[in-house]
Image 1 (cartoon, rainbow, N blue to C red):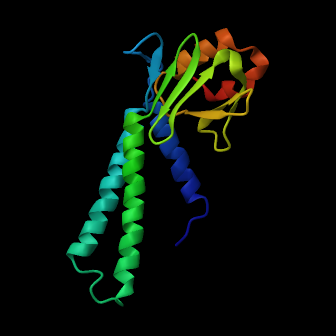
Image 2: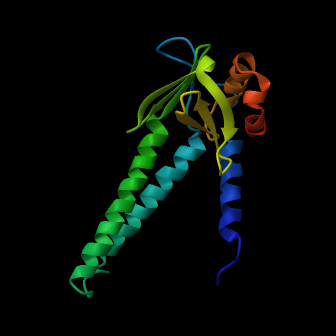
Length: 180
């Protein structure tokens, strides 16, 4: 039986749970001035558990011979899809532990797995606004480059304080309701 809206309700419940575990203050940056914003423990736990669950189901299907009585091509297709999804899950787990956002008096620096480093100096920012889903903030530079900061990071109070100090109100007011 399908319950209309159940997926959205579950997603809202998960978002509230993750945001409830968020710490307000950021950690001091170990390699220079500024503060480091990292994903919350609950966010990381979510991806660890879903990766373990999916890998366990995949291994269980192969161990019990669930693919043995299928046409010859089917196990390869299902196995390929399963491996691709597991690889995506592993990437998300790694990114949740390795991605970092550093905020300082100079600006915002994004350090992302596979996407490299991006600097967003306060003076170069055109505006800050919420993304379409409302779970991140988009920082738009004057040259058109965009960087996104998740709401599931610890230390967003420090980001708000620095935005208030370095950006005029109209450039970030639309993002204000999304920050603690």
